[in-house]
Length: 322
Image (cartoon, rainbow, N blue to C red):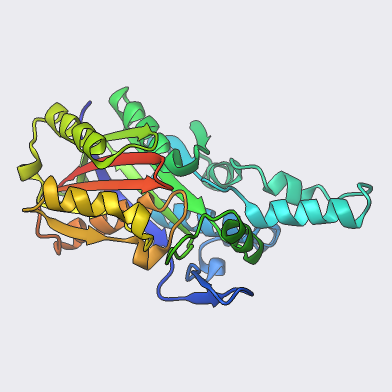
């Protein structure tokens, strides 16, 4: 598979903004922009839910003034989908005894709404796909994007978006998904990927891999070693290891083992303390690495992102600095 360049990036993410829930715990909420400046049509903007506005605005910011005829695909990812609209629709079903229901929240609650809205606004008549694969949603979309470029697309718009609501935060606590010191979060992140770089400073995505299951650290280490070997690398070649530590001792143990045993010489970085835990949080990790590379603040030339969601959905993303 040929190298793929991250030519433009955009992100709407938490910037220290905390919201306290009824249980006394807090979650990280995205710091949203002035949507009027990005989505000019007031009628269209009024019909959008919060997550749709967040995703569409982020995607439009990433596209900026790019000519749409050069975009070969719009690929989005979400783990939870449009939660607020789903809650609103279900509540109206109960309140109205399943009669005379407003269809708008149902229409806007479908997972592909964000990718479709971006395509409609910018008139992108191309391949449009949304992935909802739990903790591997973003990586599945990224894999598709890499394949599209490998098959001939000049540029692909790739993005992810997840939101959190007070109700979903309470449900996650009840289901035991926020064990220990895990802090829930949300965010939207978009990337304009291309087969050619716009300048000599843009980062390169070399490879991505996913696997599932409750694997011990030694099994994960073997998979990572095989992944690196496939790319002509050894663990000693990795300059920076970015992991998805989330504050839960049981879930973070595997990261600590890899840092000590497989990548003792590499710099170690984390990202969920800034964005919180959610199914597509790894997109924020890629945004951070890409931003550091573009700004010239990243010291390493080869970066590996390893993340797992609930110890079951594992992913590896390999980035090279030009």
